[in-house]
Image 1: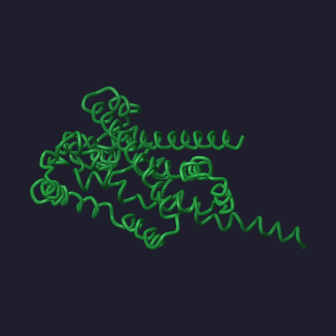
Image 2 (image 1 turned 135 degrees about the vertical axis):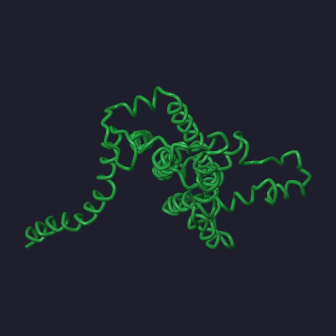
Image 3 (image 1 turned 135 degrees about the horizontal axis):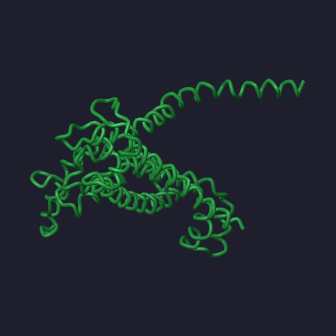
Length: 308
């Protein structure tokens, strides 16, 4: 009876997975392969018909202005990712440490910290565009009231500050995810271990360094990978705060906005055609795939070395 039950159970597993696999294949795998095939064609319209082989890729890496726009977007995306990763990992971890301590209102603060994540990225981008507006935005008004007029500037109009501002806005909105993951990891640590450390005289810094950080290292990897995938496909915040052109002077142009502009914009607005757009999308897919494997390897190696 037990063996027959196990055999029936084994047969049911693929049946339950079938629906998810079919949907995943139809809406993700097939479009990815179609995009790869489309990247070998050029021409006007949504379905270019002129086969060019690797012509689109050669143009993208060797010819003006394709090369300049692509590598500019790549550099901006890397900077964007580094800023967001630093803010969300460090500040998210610090907030998680704070809310994991028992104090009045800690549970309410946990819930509030996740609220910005539930908002639309477009709504958040539009809101911060109003806040940072150099004419009526109240952020500059606050600086003026504090006697810090020398700091007032068009934050989204200067290449030096525009990209960091976008990264800060995204970090603020999705900070709740980092706090949620880190808080769950800290709560999962055996309370007896933490109590024993306190009895032995370990302070907060020692507790964080020798107990909490080693215990939540896999969660740090998960958060970093989620940030990496999100940032290397980010489009909404650029569209909401800097338009699809990545203003000013392409200083906020990320991979997501480059792909959108390349594939769907007219020639007058920086479009390169659907074939070139598919080539950009294919390269983004490869970069993200290799990047995810790299981060998995890095955090797996750290976990192995820690266990040894």
